[in-house]
Length: 485
Image (cartoon, rainbow, N blue to C red; front, top):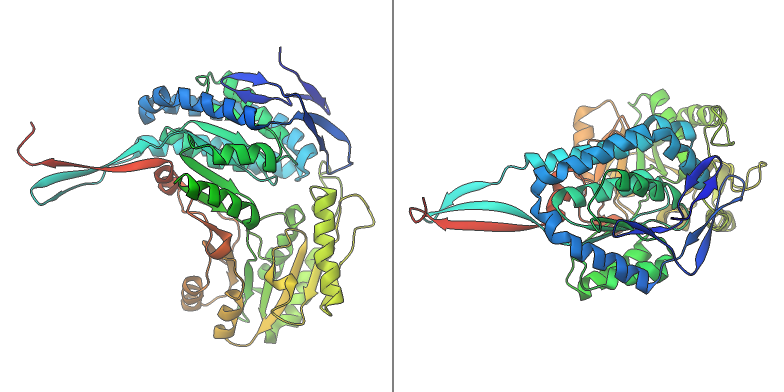
């Protein structure tokens, strides 16, 4: 009988899920709620033996799972998607306690995206059309073969959705998977594996390992039997994983955050631009795609700021379960200290704090929405990802200056532009270094579009066929014409 704990009326397993069964560990780590600091669970702390067991299970399960083909795997993914849809509220309520994203957002759009991920990739894998062409008296075909066991390591923000986003294409492509979620918010991923069990996945196809990155994560990523590595997190951790992948000649994809520009030109709808800029504080700024560097044409900066402050003033910090709350707390006291440290150093550097700049009067992990005017584009607060409710504002006078500022960091994940000029939108959209670039909108996503970053924002692309290709070995099958019938 597996161990279960109660989390505010919901039962959750703190154990791993390996080879179709819940598996415990001799040691545990604490998982506390960002909302009130309460202990949610003592979660099993995996080690090298845990990693070995999970990868061994994935290795054993791989041949039969791969042999099913896309059409044979699709029913499992569709059953899992249907189960997610039936349990959205349950998962959302646990994730709210565990990660503190607004409960209404989790219920309305975030958790349900997990079901869409499994359906979309199951269907895309079945719809794959092999490229066929004639050359040099031969017929050529490009065939996808599943690559083998994959290790997927996901971040603490939106843990359920991001885990499904990465694992769904791996499973659809025919890989077996070991998922290691972040230790700060592991519980909703554990709920996913309750549903994997109900969906009757073959043992070993989809495994969950809990634990600390430096311990079990390192054991997972250095195992020579692993044939794909996928990671979302910090550039620092990615360098360690990338070295392991290089040592074992294992393809590696990484999404590593950003310091994204939010450009506003004088011809833009300033009301819309300011409202969208204020929304960059959503989820306490813990969104990798957020436009944290506001770059505003100098002639309209005062008008923009007036509208921006009005929108931010209407925001409400509070309990993420409360329907009136718009800004949630930060994930962990350590992360709060990190965010506060960035702002304190900016203040000491002479950067101007235009609003916020301190822990909220609510205490706990809430930090005020902060806007900073830096003394220089070289300021730390401009050049490094804070991953909190902290934005900077700078001005430009020409399009060339705007693009230069936008491209002046090492990052390149996303960009946002507000303008009424279609030609400018095209020019800047092409010129700004970013994996995704939005014009007069934000966070509009198509599951078939490529997603990833440039610079230190990452390597590789997820989404659609790009993800399915990553989890496959692409083979060119070449047959001499007239020799087979």
